[in-house]
Amino acid sequence: MDGMLDSFKNIAKYLSHPLVLVGFVVLLFFKTLHILIESGILPTIAQDDGFIILLDLLRYGFIIGLVTIIAGFGLQFFKIHRTTQPIVDIDSIVERYANSQRALGRKESELADVREQFREAVSELAKLQTDKTPPSGIDKALELIAKGETGAAEVIFQEITTRHEVSVKEASAAYRHLGAITYLSDTDKSLNAYRRATELDPNSAGAWNRLGHLFMRIGKLNEAEAAYLRVEAIGTESKDLEWSAIAQGNLGILYKTRGDLDQAEAMYRKSLEIEEALGRKEGMANQYGNLGNLYQIRGDLDQAEAMYRKSLSLFKSLGAKDKIELVSGWIKALTKEI
Image (cartoon, rainbow, N blue to C red; front, side, top):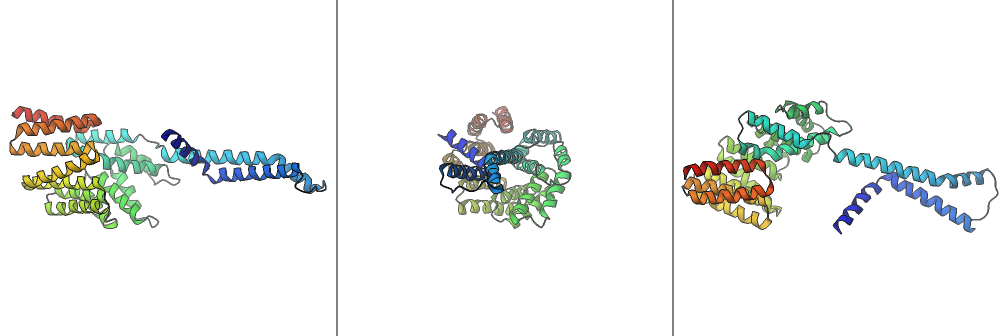
């Protein structure tokens, strides 16, 4: 049933093009006119020049309508194909960028943290590449970003934020993408970009969350806490439990950094409870990993290993290569201590 519904939706996409609709109207009009003349409902008219033109229209009306429909289908196919099929291999670009960052000594935890935001930014570049008037240098930007050089992409996103026709939400998104592109290479630039994104769109949980991460990186824990609390508030207001769980997990990391392990554990477990209710394996795996880190700090190594192994099992079921390597490393280091 779902397959049939999807098929109907795909067909509807093509039928929605104006030329297709015009073509069907033309076919219907000439077919109706032909039936009326053949049935004698329309009065007989003299076979003058007007009648001959009418016969020609009837004769070629079907062809005109058919050609119009085919043209509409063709244009709609081109439009759909062009906007949904990127000309670049986004996964390949993201992976090559990750490898270039590994070569610079970036930790797997950092790469895992930024990967999805970075993928979103690259996807936006790929989308811009298919525009009728793509930004200048877009092809080169995609080529360079795969090598770890983000300068050209930064220029493009910065340019988007200054365009007059760009809406507030579009500008906020461009700043988020700019923040993602510079997240590993330029903390100040990324921080400013995400801060601007939250100013333009105060309800962007993703921008607030990333802003919290950057404040954590530079040691501004109070500002980070405020950002994560804002994420939690947005999740509550919008009834988006996923964001609530993410915020609580990040607050747990913050409290652990402050040395408040009891409060940290409370946050991890609240986050884990929501993730379990949502059935989000990735979120559950993250919180089991966080709990493992916490128990290791407390010196409860058996419990830490148990948490790590739960985390690893979930990441394996998801095929999350980076996280598998990360948690496997934790277990290996831990078992040396036991």
